[in-house]
Structures are given as C-alpha cells and as structure tokens.
Amino acid sequence: MKACVDIGGTKVAVSLAQAGSTDLIARQNAPTAKTGDHEAVARQVMQLIEAACAEAGVPVSQVDQVGVSSAGPFVLREGAIALATPNICGGLAGPDRGLPNDWTFAPIEAPLAARFGRVRVENDAVAALEAERRWGALKGEDHCAYVTWSTGVGVGLCVDGRTLRGKNGNAGHAGHLFVSDDDNEALCGCGNRGDVESLVAGNAIARRFGVEAAELFGAAQQGDAKALATVDGLCRVMGRLLYNLTAALDLSRISLGGSVFWHNRDFLLPRLQSQLDGRLPALTDGVPLVAAGLGDKVGDYAALALVD
Amino acid sequence: MKACVDIGGTKVAVSLAQAGSTDLIARQNAPTAKTGDHEAVARQVMQLIEAACAEAGVPVSQVDQVGVSSAGPFVLREGAIALATPNICGGLAGPDRGLPNDWTFAPIEAPLAARFGRVRVENDAVAALEAERRWGALKGEDHCAYVTWSTGVGVGLCVDGRTLRGKNGNAGHAGHLFVSDDDNEALCGCGNRGDVESLVAGNAIARRFGVEAAELFGAAQQGDAKALATVDGLCRVMGRLLYNLTAALDLSRISLGGSVFWHNRDFLLPRLQSQLDGRLPALTDGVPLVAAGLGDKVGDYAALALVD
Image 1 (cartoon, chains in turn blue, cyan):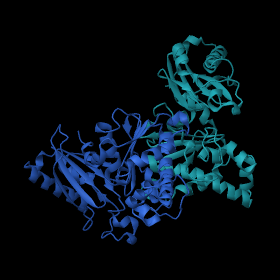
Image 2 (cartoon, one colour; image 1 turned 180 degrees about the horizontal axis):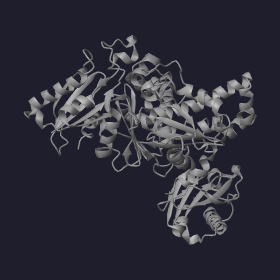
Image 3 (tube, chains in turn red, green; image 1 turned 135 degrees about the vertical axis):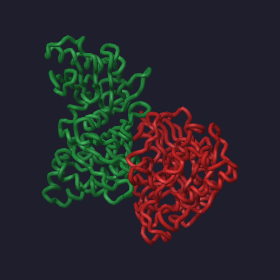
Image 4 (cartoon, each protein chain N blue to C red; image 1 turned 90 degrees about the vertical axis):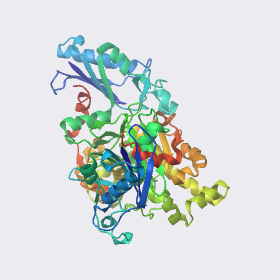
C-alpha cells in the first residue's frame, strides 16, 4: 500500500493507493499542524495515514511506501530532508508572520522513514513535474519544466531525462529569480524584493494592485484597458522566467498549472508564448508552453508520482 | 592519443595528449575558417590534427579520441551536433555581421566521428566546467557552475553530479538570461535586448560606456567614483545571474573565469558575493563564489576534460 502525502502551508492531505493502481482512496485532510514541538507535522502525517488506513480497512503495517509532496524549501538535517517552509516554521521569518511556533525546521523524512521504510520527499512543484511526465503533458519529454502559478510560483525541472534536485533537494525554486526591475518594493515571503513571486503570485497581485487575481483577469478578458495593461505586465515577468528557464537549460517543453494560470489558461498561454517566441531561436524555436495535462488534478497526482 | 580541439569565433586551436596524461603537446592554431562550404571548420580541425601529429611524430591513425570545446549554440543535424555560432555562421545573423559565408550551421560531430571514432563536442563553458570539476576549484562538487565573464558570458552547469546538456547540448546559455531592465537598448549578438551578455560582456562594456573593460576596472580600483558606480552596476547584473543560478538549481559553489573577471578577480569577488549573501538563505547560505582553480589555463584544459 502506498501513502500519498501533500503538505501545504494551509493544509495537509493524505490518500492511499494500492500497489500498481493510480486510484487515490480514503483521502484525509487537516489544517497544517503549527503548534507544539517541531515534530508536530510528521506526527500529524502519521495520524492522517492511520486514519486513512482505518477508513480503507487496511492495517497501517501494510503501508510500505510514502511519497511526500511538500511546500519548500528544504534543509538537510543529519542527512534527512526537513521542511524549512516560511509558512510553517515560525522561527524562519520572524514574529511578523505571526506563526504560533519558533521552529527553524520541521523534520519529515527521518521520522517517516523510521516508521514506514521507503519515503521520498520532494518539493510540490517537483512532484507535479514527475506526475506530468508520467501521466500528463510532459510524457516522453526529457528536457522540460512544470511551472505552477498560484498563491506562490513554483517550478520543477527535468534535464537529460532526470529530475533536478540540488544540494538540499531545492532545485526549482525559480519563483525567487530576478528577471526584471518592476516594482522593486514588492516584498516576497522569502525576503527578496522584486523577485518573480513577489511580482506575479496570486497574493502579490492582491497586494500590488488592490484587486483579487480573479477580478483582475476577469476585467482584462472583458477588454478593460487598465486591467489588460496590468496583465501584460504580469505576463512579461512570467514570460521572462519561462524564457530564462528554456535558455539556461535548453528545454523542449513547459507545462503550466496552478490556480492563477488554470482559471485563465486560454487567455494567458498566447501572451506567455509571445515572450518566448523569437528570442534566441536556437534555444526557443518550437518550444511550446502548454496547459498541464492533468489539469486541476495535477496536485492530487503529485505525491503518487513519487512512489512506484 | 587524444586530440583536444578548441573552436572559438576568432581562432581554432588543437593540442594532443597521450592516454593517461594531462600534458598538452604539439599545439597548433589558425584563424577560424569562415569561407567555402559549411564543412570548412571540420576540415580545418582535421588539418590541424594532422599538423599536430606531424609535429609530435605520431601517425594520425593513433588519434582515437577527440574532445571539442566550442563556442555555441549548437543544433542537431541528423542526430549529430553542428555549430550554430553567430560569430562563425554568416547565415544566422544576417549581412550586418559581415561574415564571408551564408552557413546556417557548420557540421562538426559527424565528420570528425566518421574519421576518428570517439568524438565529444561540448559548449566551451561546459567543457571548462568539467575541467574545473576534475582538476580545479569544483573538485568534489556535485551541484556547481562555471561562469566565464569574457568577451561574452558563458555558463556550464552541474546538478546532482551530472553536467546538464539539454535538448541540443545547449544547456548553460545563461548569458542570454534577463535579470534586470537596465539599458533595454543594449543589443546582444543573439538578437536579445537587455540580456546579461548585452549588459556586462567585455564587448558590451566598450559599446555601452565608450571605454575598454580594462580601463574601466583600472579607474574603479583607483577610486574613480563614476567608474566605481559603473562597476557596481555591472556587478549587480552579474550577481543577479549568479544568484538566479544558485536559487534555480540549488548549487553549492560557483567558479568564475574569463578575461574580464580574471584580471579583476580580487576586486570583483566580494562585490559579486554580496549580491548572493542574505538572499533566500535556505538556498544561498554558505555558497561561495571562487576564482577558477585552473586560473587562466582553464580554457586549455577544457577540451582535455572531454576525453578520458
């Protein structure tokens, strides 16, 4: 039995899947644990796995593989991945965040591995990349990226047929790249000013323009000139990120998802593609931007992609 | 016997090395062939290998491995790497470049493989990366980059212990990333306006500021306020590129070379490091920028690193 765990800053969800199956069953979820000691998140995951097993009527001892798709970044502690996620660990971002703990990291791989054996922890965008490569719009692609444009901006990268991980498993934190000088006062959750996420993420749109993302894109699609200009500015930033990834890594395809993108995908895709086309043609010719093949289910399949 | 080939826009150089040796012998060079049909560069390389063999007193038939470190980008033609280098192929950039040919590509891997068997062609910055990993400042590093700051800006990337290649072997063309909006009129050889290379490369400095790079850095080091401000602007752009690579790929170390950097390395290193330090600490903490361990010999060892 496989346990599929999705850890976000707001919510933790766990599902089960039989060996050889892609049917997710017995889904459980709860608000992300943020009080007590820094093993609270790992304990919560174990409790949710127990609850899922109870619902499915299988003994917990049958769980022999755990895939964890989590918001990052990660740090290594004694060789095992721990979460260093600013939305979970109150000791990272300081008291301004108002989190009810002072954790600088939250162990995850070590406690789960001690109980369940095989555990694989990946950044949620990396896990979504693997899901898109197995079942979605990136099948057969050896040089590709999955980009989520949502509350934040996350990226999973694959070059030469291998998912990139990096020194602490944080490769793909490309939402924190600098691609322009627009609005250098925009403050990102990571502490940067003016990086991609601080300029275009869902929560940045609300903060920068005083309007929810859905409302802004709705107005732009109805032809409102000011909203259109704002959206073009957002697409310039996101498009430069997509171009940068393509040029730096010689990618052949990028798949996009996330709530901001997904609800406006037909409107956004040509605007983003125009930021790629014609730039450094030896690198970008014939490189398509496409909507996630798994659609709005990409998050559900992400953790499943991490287990066999 | 190994043949080590270095192809630049100005010059082609060939050396030989005995199996198991890192001594480069019988060096030959000539201005890069740019007339005749598009196999002229490959023919020139073969002639230089023949000349080197004659000088070393070994039959050409003993050459059983060829490493080619070349200016990029590359394209694949019938599965083999060909050069699509704007400084060599006159058909790419149009008549403004004044090149005496209309090549859109120049075959290199196929003709050399037909004659010598084992051939490996890599971008010159990728080859330099491999040299730095074998003999230089990146020994033992599995997540690292080599960045050359010279007439152009080139990058070789290694993540999870593997050199990144990409769909056409062009991964690492990070000199063509957009990291800021400084001087959007700056035109790069690749056609981009305002990418890193168009802003900070040696030839860009002369064009943008009307002063040779050596003169600019000399004035800055003597405390000239205007020159210092200009250099700080260059370091901001180059530093954002180095930060972007570190954050996107979770690197642990970056080694730098190239004539612009090398002649001013003690002056530039702390200025570049300050663009990395403190940004997204989970990704950048303890990531040092270092001068190339192979010093100004890194180019000589680059092609050698491509053969066993």
